[in-house]
Length: 586
Image (tube, rainbow, N blue to C red):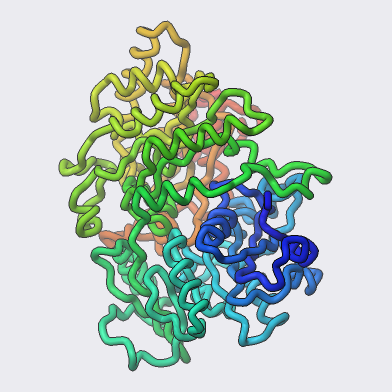
């Protein structure tokens, strides 16, 4: 069977009377390991469970949730690869016109998709149907959270979705444990002991050791919201976490400790599953899923990120511990890609959340969990961090030396401050073999005041890396450039900081065609700053640009060269009493 079944007709054709699980997703059905829906479905299949997929059920058709019938064990529900609100709205809160995770970019995903789909299932099948939610939308909303689109604190998604169980973080281990217990005859209501899950309960009498968070009603006090979020942030590794409980008026939300990360053998097994690397056959009559184009020939080498950038959800979702695939596993996947009919000889990326991180960067992190009082990386790098790129570059070398591979690129985020700490031979190898003319890096800003709040490195480290990169390219006779990702209006960024960024861009002669405005997404430290106007680690007030006017001004300074921004740039410079810069910033 090439694809998993998507309707009753296909189930009958494959002699499946009743499927064990139905996975419901806000994404179109793409059978690729970069899509969480297929990853979980194929993993269950590898443990001999039958799985069907309902992709993007129509909220206007109640029967769309019944396409595969009632599963024997449970419905598994996700918004897809991205939070539905981030997917559906610009940072201005205006509706997006495209969804690259849908066929022909058509918007099919409802707002708050996880809750909408779960309620559709509950209405169709009643209270006896087990509903398990997961994916990034559920994971980042497992406790009460600030919702940017409604500008208020919302309760746990377990309450708004009426689901029975929530799987947070990367859910493969948890979902197999859940499947085995359900298959043995246990009720979903009895599964209150599985690591990596959250659930709702009416009494705490059977729970002995836990950390009590502030109640939902207490979160009106922003200092208590900060305290609650930091407790969650610090309880994100299996080795050091406690059970967390958030009280509500008539129930409690309980979060069990995290599930241990996948071992290398488990991660290798996951990526060795029979993915087709294609979108569902029926879509081809209608068009394409553009999200597949960028990642179809990309290899994920690791999971987790101990960079801990404050605006990134990966710390809260995947955790700081790194799990890394073996070289042989990545080589095997490259061979599978080469067998695809439209493969042209290019591997578009070998990377991950941060490409050059590995699973042996910090002994303490792997044994005891992360430090509460400092970051592995950030504005300054921890001295205990091990620096070793040998595993990563051995894998790159092995993939690029496969006969028939023309080029292997690295596009998904080199952490330049970490690479700088290692032998220069790795920078030379990166530039010589793995850059496609432009190397995208993420300094995000140049103001050190802002960078500290972002938990990003001092800008001098970026400048040093670019200087070394330019020297290496010159020695190789290559014309290649480092291009920065940048962000405006991050908490702490004043108009003066935006001007500093504009002058930095003028200095390096870079004119960005795209400018990212800070987007307050659920469950990040930066969103916490945005909502509370405080640095959560010191409780000191910080400046936050919230008005549409100022955000436009800061963003315009980042792209001062565009004619459409000319008047906004003049206005910003006038406010800052820097009219002398008007002839310069043009």
